[in-house]
Length: 604
Image (tube, rainbow, N blue to C red; front, side):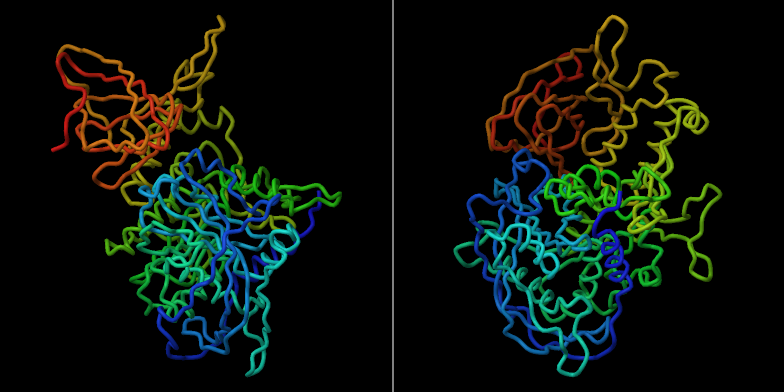
């Protein structure tokens, strides 16, 4: 199937990645407090809805989504050197665009960090790739997320998609440089100021349509994927020194060269696809930059694409087949040599850790850890092992203990080059690699411990990896009746709800308490919005959530949210507390204690 705009997508993507600028030195022209905030007005057009509305049910997470028009007058800038500060060309260019805001319903859950994503427009429309990969983490940890339509191609698609809602949006201005030539390779001469003025509006807290009313904002973190990451590279180098609004930058595949004199923390998470480009490969870490390349990853992971981006693009209906039917972004990538598309190595887990590290870093904590880089020969070519995998980089358990072959590279027409692929192993291949299910679980656990200890995944993501390995059906047909949902010949169904060797925050369980066993099962109901005091449990315990939701945290800052149907493996001898959501929460709790042992006790 040939899909419209496929060639446009890849040409824009490649052009963006090899983006470079000519040179100029200049002094900053104004301070951060002189960046005028965009005027924000909540969108209210009956019978319409936002493009790129969240695919996931935000209410289930205790979140809400609102859309605002953002308008003002913007500067034009001249960027002659990619590593030097821009100069002001002129001012007073009117614009009107939109932003989308996703925030907690309960303001107390806000962690003080606003992630501001520069929408990616490589496919011809706004796409929220950073949110799509890390929405679970962002909502679990209480971030506010804001998506900014900063570029003309995205705004024009908004105009066409819903004239009633978006017909008045525009970011048009002359791209001509009074000194000759043009100012921006994409013609988006107002995008820099739009992104800055939105940031200023989020920090200023004024006006009748303040989307963050009642929230104490500590820091803004700018985020962008691929083409947007390249735009944010230029913003970091040339505009951030003028605006000084964003305290951290998250790049997803990936940042190009960043200036070494900037003292603004940045983490660039890269994939195998991004690593192939010299503009990205040629630069390393600096005191305020960490490059985290993830082995075995495609430009977007299978889970991100299948579980979010494809759902979004199909629903919104912009990408179409020749007969006019809406298609997914995956369907818009036909004819590739290797299928199924997209690697199953989940880059999003490393993105989650990157946000967590940036949160600590921008708030004055320790810098993010340095990551192993992909190995290269003297001519810069990527090195590969005998199995064809790239050497070096962050090696997640899904690559180090795989159930299939994963690659970030593919070939074929259009955008195949960035799609990667995965080939699941058959039972014989699995048995040759692991022998049995226990061997597979051991390899997963070993790889998980290594990457967790290095700081490139979070404890609860590590625990989810372990639980998934334990509950997998690897070798079920030859290994017996463990670790999976199943039904025997009598029709009796068994659904394993949890199998864990560590608590929800990743701390490994030890032995059961000594003494005469006295297991206790309790039904517990906690009122809505109730904040439990710090306490601990002296024995292993496990809570099945019947209804409602609860977010638990320990004193190391680890947090995890549980909703109806989840099982929470409680911590042992570790101080923690919980906050119940907007509805009462009911649990069935199993305590594996000894006679006379208290079920819980106040934390010391």
